Length: 81
Image (cartoon, rainbow, N blue to C red; front, top):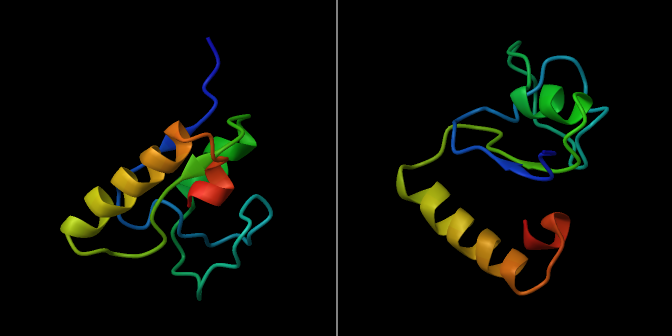
């Protein structure tokens, strides 16, 4: 079984210390923490949605509701985000 998309509801799971070679959006100033999302993509998962910073508790629920709805409507992960 292959993982085609990983979504992570974890603060700073997309934060990066080592550059943005696997990220499409340029990250903000690095904090020195490794990027879980970057490692996931490097391991072969083609798409990963994660959080770049701390977020308010309700933000991920609203984001992922809209994100998954867009995916179910036929959108790509990039377009859904």
